[in-house]
Length: 249
Image 1 (cartoon, rainbow, N blue to C red):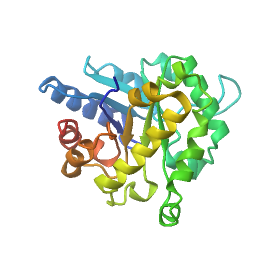
Image 2 (cartoon, rainbow, N blue to C red):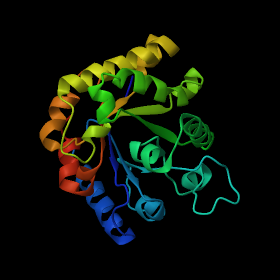
Image 3 (tube, rainbow, N blue to C red):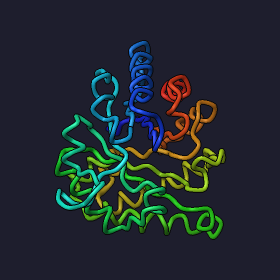
């Protein structure tokens, strides 16, 4: 059975002390509710060890990226083994900001995914189209091409992937895909997985929605049969807002 998941992506926000305070607030809030989903915070590399120390059993930890190399002369990079050594369980790969600003390719992301899985990290793999592609009706074509990074995996390894559909035109813009738009493309993504790996794997794959998801719209999005939770940006930087999304289930 697939999981419902709400994952926060803090991006390049908070100092270590601010991050520990936020993680502590989320952890304490989680202890006070019966959450119907798995909850993850994906934090900057600098915060991983400190935030791990305040994460209880209900709060999982992830990184926002990892390198496409194992080790060596790659100044400023952080390998999957380094991420895993902090106690993190998850890593976000393929986020649209990484693709747009840092030129990450299908091939590079395939290598990052492979290294993450080799180090027992579960991958939250992001796919999604920009506004021009959506307006041209190319969203299906775009997400299908982006999935090639993970469609080279065995069925067993693909089972360790959480997909996050993020319409790039809705990230940080205040625009959100309608519940129906989200459901339509999530269903399409699941059909591609079924074609590749079969119906059982497709049914077991968690597909999150990312893109200006907040407490006011989370319940409608999560009610759709193919939307299994959210990858949350701005709203994850406030414990109360983040928990408002967690409790939308």
